[in-house]
Amino acid sequence: MEGSPQAPPVKVGETYEVSIDAVGGKGDGIGKVKGFVIFVPGVKKGDYLKIRITKVLQNVGFGEAVEKLDRPAPRPSRFVTFTHEDLKRSEPEPEKHYEESDDFGEDE
Image (cartoon, rainbow, N blue to C red; front, side):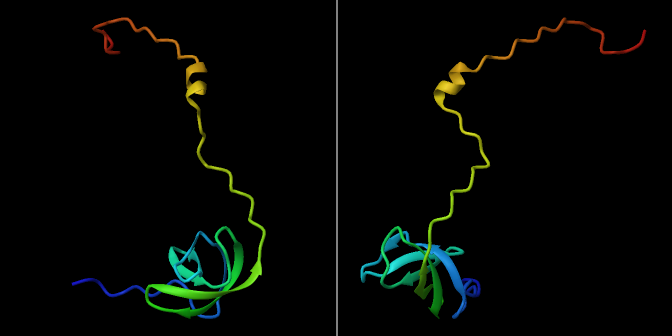
């Protein structure tokens, strides 16, 4: 038996900024809000816009375009990227040499 269905993360009347990542078979733009699929008629793939939620079903929602927006600047990555050439250029750390000893820091 499956667990109880989770409530959709959007409600009718709410507005969100979404990127239209695909176009469905009926020509509606497809975007996501918090991982939840939203269909928006009259838009095309690549659009970035403010939408208002008009209908919410258990697995999908529907919205209408309110305003076309400029894409926000991409956020800088939290990760550093190295190319293969960068790694080749980096100098290896000098090897540390240790003397072998039976003295483990114990006082005699």
